[in-house]
Image 1: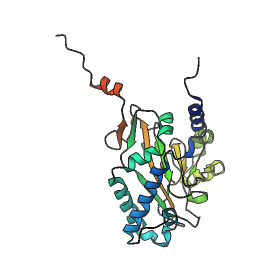
Image 2: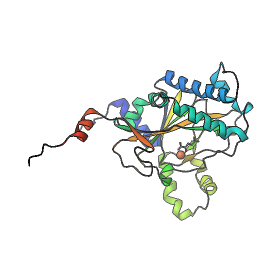
Image 3: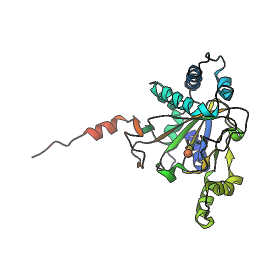
Image 4: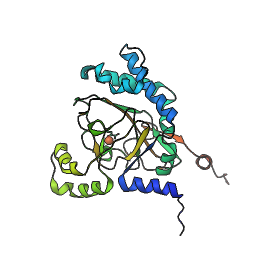
Length: 266
Ligand SMILES: O=C(O)CCC(=O)C(=O)O
Ligand SMILES: [Fe+2]
């Protein structure tokens, strides 16, 4: 039987299946820059600072302007403004649209609200210890588009457990009777990948594998957004269509099919 995959799409799919993630250049640098600039300008306005010339450097050094006490307020303000702008979800999608169509499908549901994570150096108040989102109500059919707005590396990035290692550790979790996420972290630590992602690239990953972050010990602040996509007809879990997800691309044949009624013969 001939493969129905195109070569380059097959290569992308294989990489994703093998590792559980792929890092690739943003498909639209203009959309990525526009998102980054929005984050920087909204943060500047919230902190009553002039708009920065170099938006990336401003984001990297935001810890010089805001302390942990006010961080959550800032984060919520930026999330609100980002989600009020009508163009931001489309811009996110445009950074990875072809890859998402290859990895997830071309009839898609997208998360309604984009999440933002800001991690100041030394801040232990906004951590996401090792987890797989599917353990807490996400559908295993979801793929996360994770976009960094600064160069992320070392402890400033997130870690992920590649699929094979994840399967090995998940198989042993019952027998190890790990009592805390700290113990779990110590067990998987040797196999973790710390994703070094220069600005200009995006990450797509499955939240079926373990991932998370630790205290950022680098001298710069991390800024990233995450947003989930799934095939519109794949099974939903706690995060429902219409509440958490919204269809963004439904093809004509599906519309025709969904709206069709057989003529009544009675
Ligand atoms: O941003 C991070 O460090 C973790 C993100 C995460 O856990 C997620 O998007 O599911
Ligand atoms: Fe997660």
